[in-house]
Length: 346
Ligand SMILES: C[S@@+](CC[C@H](N)C(=O)[O-])C[C@H]1O[C@@H](n2cnc3c(N)ncnc32)[C@H](O)[C@@H]1O
Image 1 (cartoon, helix red, strand yellow):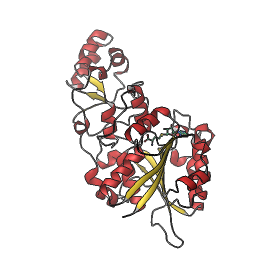
Image 2 (tube, rainbow, N blue to C red; image 1 turned 90 degrees about the vertical axis):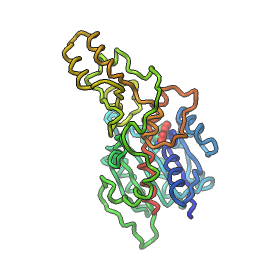
Image 3 (cartoon, helix red, strand yellow; image 1 turned 180 degrees about the vertical axis):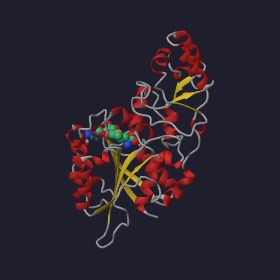
Image 4 (cartoon, rainbow, N blue to C red; image 1 turned 120 degrees about the horizontal axis):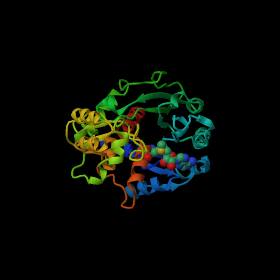
């Protein structure tokens, strides 16, 4: 049995922590989160509510020093999901020029000064793989004697009914003359990590959406009529038998284009849309058809289950629905991260 000390940076609501817990349940290894660090008070409130015993620092990561990390934490593993806005279309893809890239740049400058560090996992959005930030990450870790293996993968590829294509950079510090036998190209499937996937498979929930849905959902989750009228043509509608859903973003519930799927609870989708189409501008007739579908938002609990958070994961009672969607949208797929950490350590 090995015991690892884990530093969780940009910890948000604790997606990395949940991945480590999953590994702890499914392997003989032990993991201790020596510190989780984030600046966002809402995400921190949720993290602390779920992990009251974890050492959690409400800090700006740009102010953390190598001395502090070495003296107080001496981590073996660094897990981090730095801000993705510098690499998204909505964030204008300003890459290193975006001030939100500063914290990652700062951490990269510290890596060579943390001698205990042997493993790093960095998660980010698709687009990061072509950024200068990624080039800096690769260059920094290589100079510090790490070897790197990169992935662009989606949980839907392994039967989880939710899409979340993400970049993962894994780095492992190897002893002199021993190399980590991994390809130099970015891996876009699970072939290389198949043994880790198999090892954790029994702990990963897959299936159709019905396996992730709550029952007796309040009517508050039904789409408002003005939303139905305005956005019915662009909604991504799924039902309980679907084996897919779109990536849920932090704007879910606020915006309706490309922010996540909507659940159809009854009726016949094609028939209702055909009738609505025929009704043209007659709003009341259009609504009459669309109401039959009982379209609703996914609940935060359903989204967290799709992301692979355990059933015990909960939001504090004072956390608004908007805050729940925002923080979940920023989080990650716990199962995919657990598989990747397992691969990196094995
Ligand atoms: C993509 S999210 C990470 C989410 C996390 N992995 C989770 O499971 O919720 C990025 C996080 O970085 C935090 N963050 C951004 N800049 C920061 C900084 N300078 N110092 C500390 N935290 C920062 C944000 O508050 C946000 O929670």
